[in-house]
View 1: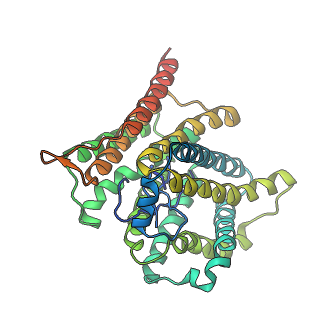
View 2: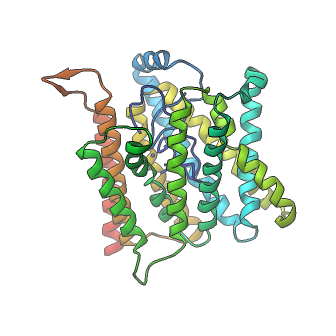
View 3: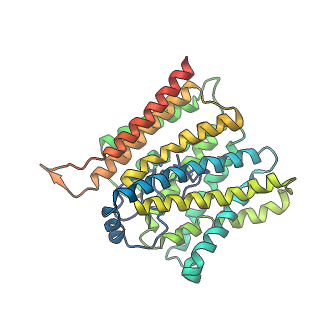
Length: 386
């Protein structure tokens, strides 16, 4: 995920994900993310590109038919799989073009496409916001997150960068206590510790394997978590499509002033296509996530954000010849576990039904998907060690 973007399902992110949380918020991702995401939670959630009220949306999800839910799962898998593809193009372009030109293509593409999609229906009201300064800060930290993430790509594998970005929901959980005044119980605090431990295992500070560029990804994840928190405070005031458009405003304006001085003309159609893909793939992936959240409950599709880790690993190996070492797999496994625990506990706490004073709604799909992801991680760890 270009910081994003991964983790508005987490995420969702990425790693380009725009996260919008709906009210009330059932969940908090590549992992992500989103999260994007009013909106729904993924690894922290990606916004539902819809202006339906929260009750209407909840009723729609509650009445989802099995076939519709299955379609939502398909849309989510397709959407989160496109984020690593977008990051692959960005990583390839870093070999020949400056950071700011790649970031410019990412944000201007986002802004042009989302404006073209939403403005015919909303008109100039699309740009009306009740909290302009907060929107500006939110767009700024998202820009910083993307700049840090893209800046690290020449030196960090896609799988490693994606894994670290998935710590964003973990950071959001920790900061929400002070930032939003939320209560976080022992389960989620334990998950925060596990997730941050996973990041330390991947980064390996103080060892010969330490890569200082991974700190840029950590900075990207931290900025993305601030972006998610600000998004959650704005969904009460602005429409989802307004949030989506404002996400790219600061990045577009800043890079439009920088690129004329540092940019260079692409040499061939392949490079032009790669630049066009940055904005197009991000917008299309976002659309697929939106469609997924319209068709299926967030509790079902949000954990699928971690499919991004698998796609990032596959593309990193096929395109760049990078295969994560055993410590990266182990650290990613810890991050996945922590993210699933946080999503599960938040979803469980949001349910109204109680029995004997305790919440009794459980999410079997999350559990099964989590087991599947952990099985893949365990298998890859075994192969790396053998």
